[in-house]
Image 1 (cartoon, rainbow, N blue to C red):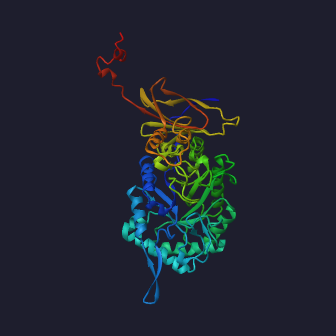
Image 2: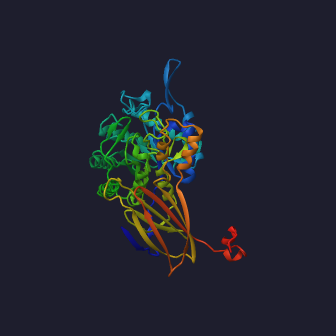
Image 3: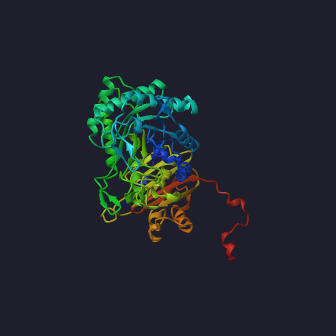
Length: 501
């Protein structure tokens, strides 16, 4: 289908929160070199503001300790690893969005754990000691990094207490939240705290119960958090899992539903809503994460999610991740935007393109946004579909954009097919589990998008741009006015390069 569009001169603010926050695995992974290598890659091109992950209080970070001295037991807080982790974040221009969890070994009330790395998810044996742990950690961070810095770090209480990440009841989570939020505010009332960090199970019940508990008990609450995944139940095939994948607007509808529930409570209605995890699949062995389909699919979500959510944190930036075990190969269906050996996946460019979008939204539909700012246009287009479906045709446009000068350059970057598709190249290499130097070099090159450029000339006050987006492709077009200096180069005749007359 061909759409001919006349783009208006002015639009409305583009609510683009794609770079506000990004997810990581457990925080202790930041002690690994390759994790930091990936963080550098992401920050150089996308520059997220915050990073959020699990395991702040898990024993691999090693903060909470109990030791016996002269026959008496005492609590000891060890911040050695935490300092290294936070230093690494700040050195890469990213702040922590702190998640309070999971339970230290010495405070646990049971053996229930999650993941390969066994994060304990039981309630604390002492809520008072839990609160003291929070106070001690935040006080240390303030002493090390400065109060005015630390008060800008949001704090979320726990992770997905409505499923297996919490071994207690809803009421016990509310108790954990109360002790946690009060401990945060005791350190500094300006630090923002929120929850309930639920996933999409009994959403309305949990949100309403949480809101009413906080309101009725006058508890600190500065923002609301939840998670969004857009797939059905997984089916295992060998070492991988597959799902029915819902339309990307499934997440948009979840955000609308959350906002509608919030609107029923005047104290809650206008609070920030942070989606502290989102993706299509919620398992780190789903091949869709590595595909060009996924880059286009996630683009549709990013194009509209900012209308309803103040942030939406993609889970995750890196395949250095160990929920199901140490990953088996360079491509394994991991959550990350960046695969092992710093190979950028197609979805990396989804976020890079949105990081470069203009601040003013001129046009939006199911496959395209047109934005502008600072004397330039940025157009992002996508076309996601199962190629076996009947609706997998290319999306074609003829755009008329108000000119910004007599001449402009159009730079186009394309992801899809043979371009920025390292999964395809890895398959062509025979799917090696580990890479040698030559294979790594090949894959790094194959991960780059195709870049082309063209000259645009003003015609009747407009630039005319023709664009076709094939199935499972993503593209970005940046249009910038230029001053043509050709007349200043006497004797510069292209034909004479080849001795032609």
